[in-house]
Image 1 (tube, rainbow, N blue to C red):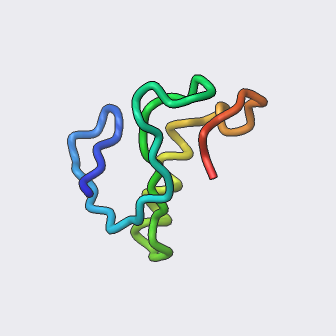
Image 2: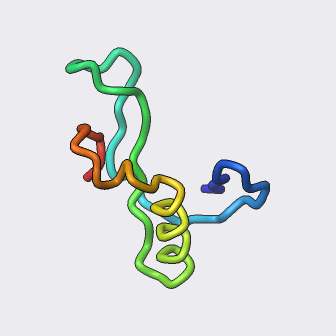
Image 3: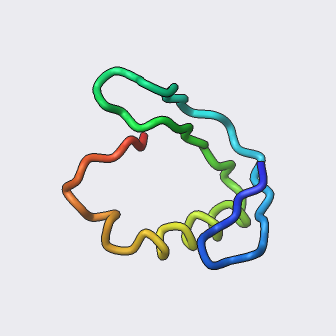
Length: 68
């Protein structure tokens, strides 16, 4: 897939694996979307670090997420 981050025009290629899919109108008020498992290479680790920087303090929030 090609991933674009907020405020960044670059498109990052990621050869990830679909980890989960939540369809529209899923039970339990879950938000529609997909989860991607990134490969364990240096470029993917750098991209993950960048995503975590963008998410900032919400990573340590007690608010529930739909992550694995």
